[in-house]
Length: 233
Image (tube, rainbow, N blue to C red):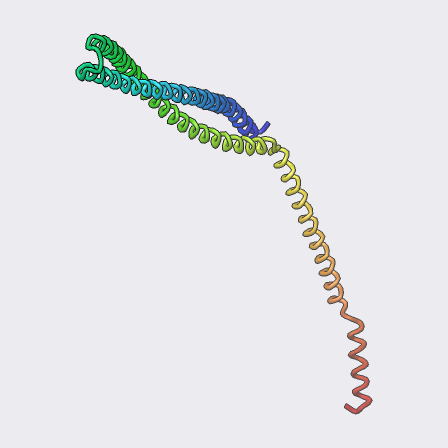
């Protein structure tokens, strides 16, 4: 195995390890986001329930306040009737005392309900703070998840590229190219050799012809001289 191929194999192995390590954070982040969203849903439900109880207690408190005011008004009306002679004084005092007792009961309920409303309000504030934190964490983790997935895509693309490069038999390819270069060089040398042989053959023929002279040219020269003689030239 060539040095380059060994390097590619090492890089491929490291990428596989990196991908295995990268998949776990992605899965953990996805699970963490699901858990946070589940917690957020529960917190929203609890917030709605506590708010409903606070509203109910506040309404009951207002009703108790109205009832206390109404009992006090009735006690005053009873005493007014006794004063005007429309009712026995002792009976008016008795009933007015009963009305005032009811008023005190209502006031006690108002105080109790007011404490409940304050407790509910504290719970509402804490739940709203938790919900705000949960939403912030969900947003942060979702951004982190997008980053991790982007890194995973880049790593996957790099892994595939290195895998393809690692599968290339560089030593075999170089050997094949060397053989092709040798074959081309051999063909070029043969062509040059044949050219030299052809030139050498042509040169020898020229030398022979030059030494012997061209008989056709000599015959043509004699015929021309004879023709000129005949014409008196």
